Length: 165
Image (cartoon, rainbow, N blue to C red):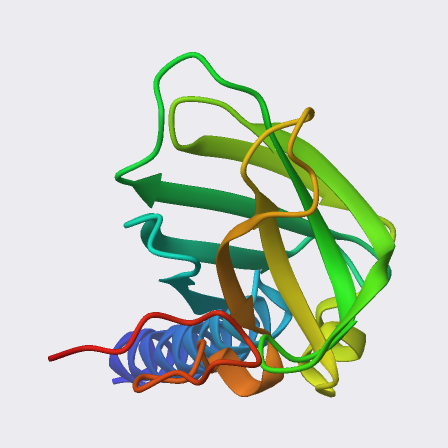
């Protein structure tokens, strides 16, 4: 009888320990998801009849850095198109860049900026792509960063956004 009691006690102890480890693992899994890379997608709208549309994916790289990946369709092949984060919105952009981004080439650009995703999400910022180094004043694509928003759908003359029919 004593052997059965000890065996039962050991089995119960192992079961309880296993449950405790499983609970800890579950908590760690939730923490990893919570602390994991947060991201948002900004819709990039065409400006000035460029036809250049796409997305900019912003992914947290810790508390004070964010990876910005721009992916556009409809742009010229082999042309360096400067890109920046500007204060303001696509409708009313501050022409002075707040943060430079790698040039968009063949529709692609990836840059890690020294700004946290939480700061970028506060709003009042936009990602803007220019036609070329030579024609820096012509905007071809833009997306407002506020909460993953995008350039206005219908557009207006001020922003140069194309109206959709």
